[in-house]
Each structure stands twice: as structure tokens, then as C-alpha cells.
Length: 158
Ligand code: PNS
Image 1 (cartoon, protein in one colour):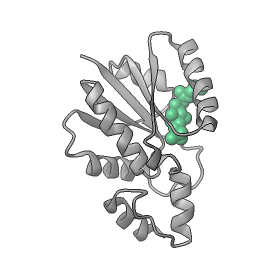
Image 2: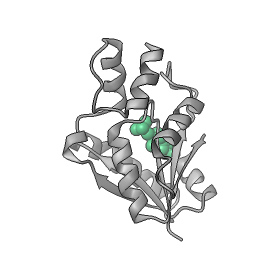
Image 3: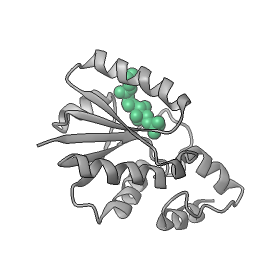
């Protein structure tokens, strides 16, 4: 069984994340979305539990997707889940530099895991959770950036 983990902060999950989740779920038998529980990250919009609920809500039609949180190292989470692969989405060259470094570091930490990159669909290439939060703070239109049910939850926060 091919098991992959797709890690991130997902604060909140965007349509770009959802696209990667859908595509990766067709490649692997099981895809485990891992929400990083990072207490040092200041003032998240959603708690880890809320983020998990949001991701579960927008992926409930995809049978082989599970959502869980993790603390500590990604390679340890991958090991605990019996995964062989770490899936990451790539949008820009700036993403590449950071992701390349992380992939090499994770490989150094544990060479058993392969990081596999999926290129963003161009229509999502400019979306990030931080941009969504900034836009939400200015009451900007979030249509098309995040799923409708996430828009509703963001409205309750700002
Ligand atoms: O959505 P993000 O914030 O870009 O996701 C970053 C994430 C969660 C993938 C990354 O921070 C991560 O893997 N954190 C876990 C700690 C870890 O293993 N770091 C790499 C080695 S120090």
C-alpha cells in the first residue's frame, strides 16, 4: 500500500491545497493530511482542531484521505503513519528554494522518505493562506481562493 503524507499549516485550507489533495489522492492508496501543531506560531486564525475540521469537511467526498495533526518532526509523523512519501505543492521559484532545502533536510534526517512535488494548477499559483488571511482582514472577496464553507468560517472570525 502506497501511503503519502501531505503536511502543512493549513491556516486555513485553500483551493490550492485542495487541488493538491485531490490530485495526490489519485496517485496514492492513502493520503494523510498532516496539520502541524506549532505552538510557537503566533496568532493563528484557526486552532488545529478547527483546521482539521475544515479539511475534513472539504475532503469528505474523497475516500482515501485522512486528516490528523502532528507535533515535532515531519519524518517522525511519516514514520508513525507508515508512509513512504511526503507530498508537497509547488507554486513559485521562491517556494522551490525553501522546499528544496526542506526536502534535503528531511532526506538527511531519514533517507527512507521521498519528497514528491506536485506543481500547482496555474489558477491557484498566487493563493496562500497568509494572503487569504490578509485579504479577509480587509473584508476582501475570497471567492475562488478558499472553499465556500471556509469563507463562511473566516467571516465568523473577522
Ligand atoms: O504550510 P507550511 O507552513 O508551509 O508547512 C510547513 C511544514 C509544516 C511542512 C514544515 O514546517 C514542517 O515540516 N514542519 C515540521 C518540523 C520539521 O520536520 N521541520 C523540518 C526539519 S527541521
